[in-house]
Length: 298
Length: 298
Image 1 (cartoon, rainbow over the protein chains, first blue to last red):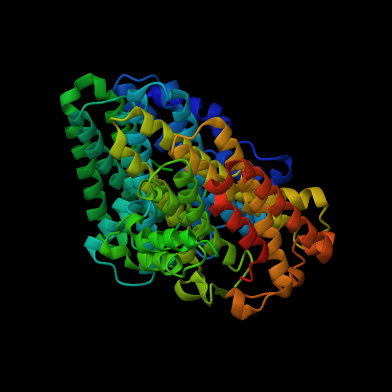
Image 2: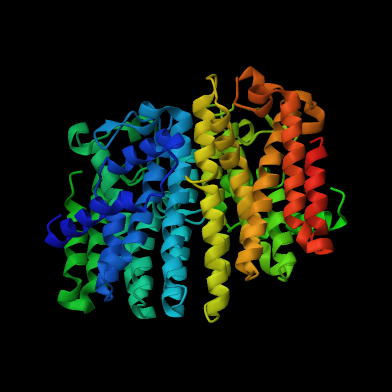
């Protein structure tokens, strides 16, 4: 990413993400290993960095936002592990290494995904317990947790995934495609910036702007992903490409065509920039990120 | 169950559990159906009733505890759906009807399990948002949520399940067997009574007693389950029996023998009764329940 702050925050997440994973007993070392395997596989850490960036934008120290940032990455990683299972997308490669179930088996991968979802809420509620004497900090944390869980759950990411599974191989209307993309991808990205705002105690107008920005880049992110599945290489992407077409997945290129998809991506990027324009230089990070996501190659 | 209050609280849960499931969009109706299918399949509702009973015991109205009670049942139901998957126990029958994946397929069952875990936290954080002006109620709720998630997660239920999966077909020491049973079953049952106590703002001594009671009946419950798999009928149990031996599962009868298992069950029941003895008649519900769990036939 072009903005140097991105890598600073990404490093903060990389350096501390395992600190927020609850310690299992020695008996359950395989479970622990399988969760750590997928968490350490890297990736962009987009969601946690976005949460930290939004919190910082609203005046909160990155360190205070870190448990929620890592909790988001736990949810995201859980969804990748389950998505890769044979009964879902059946992928062997993720972030350039074998998928979780290829290493630990399907049963352990299922449990690792469940464990990461629960670890996410354990990290957040554990942090909340540090502030039981501070009503305002409890309030902010409750709002942030509710935002994260809504973005992840059956009115967000999981509902998008369920439609994605159901539509495979069938005709997909443009309205349903938008619904799938908004839910399976944009919902959690939107929750990232919104939760960051809540943690920092931002006012309603700022929360609304961050939410609108998150929706725009969240959808743009998924369209770019769809295009990269057409154009990208397995080497660059660290995962199998061209699989969407093989599986007759509901994608922007499949429903709208390549050119219209690129136009929509550009339009969403412009929208994101316009939303943050009133904040001038304070929104430099968000502007850089929106442009980077449009031109990304992995 | 012999105590009439059990069925009153069970009915409260049965009548309202779907109210706490977040509404999906119409597009995601299959996800919703699959989650509701498993939630409506019934069962004893032991965990939610225990949470309500503990809250009531400590002076809180059952209605105020209901969101957390239903959240517990969401977690439990999620674990059953994933446990039944072909890659785990591969069961076709649960509570007398086909398992979730037999009806909705493995992909949807995986997502239904994930969705229920997330719905659990959505129900709880949504309830928390009703009390943002009441620091004491926020505090109690944060403690209850943390208790539930710890009992469910990688230091509780999920860690127990992971060892259960790993030990299949291998020699199991008595220490490891205790670890598995304490985690895969007793942890969530213990969390139920403990969270009920926290919600009601109980003092530390009462929380400690409820916790000790929960551990005793939680372990007793699993030993009874192991024995029922040997003695029970598919008709009574609503699921396949004798499968533990087939799968060489780590069970009490397999490790200790039938008679020693029965003796341990009786001893744990006595321990549960002894813990609650200082509360005399106030603990009638808990005493009845401990005795019922020892002699249960399903």
